[in-house]
Length: 149
Image (cartoon, rainbow, N blue to C red; front, side, top):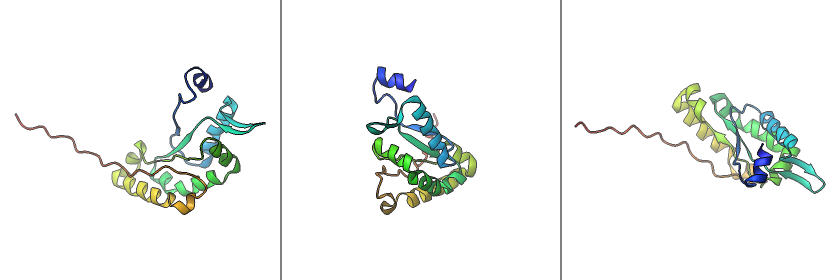
């Protein structure tokens, strides 16, 4: 379906494919295999091609603690490296959303998200790949209190 929509609507019809509850690099590689089977990624006589961007979403406190190992395994894989380069050489990673608050509470989520972002974003570790800036967790606004009438 994605292939047909890209042909009919636009090559930019789809944004990033987010993989919820990513626990291992294999979760990303499984999506890339499906993309290959659909004709969205692979290797042709002209070289590597990749028409899908994939973003692992690390949601639980345990997953946030393993971001570095998962990304290292993923980025060290030569096949994934070639597909990443063919798609613009930028890896997007999502840290701590929905289930994180349920898993360990908002404070644990914020601490692990910031820790994970700081550990996984230093320039010397990403010298071969362009990474987007890592956003800090947003502050939740308190509900507005309406004046008594």
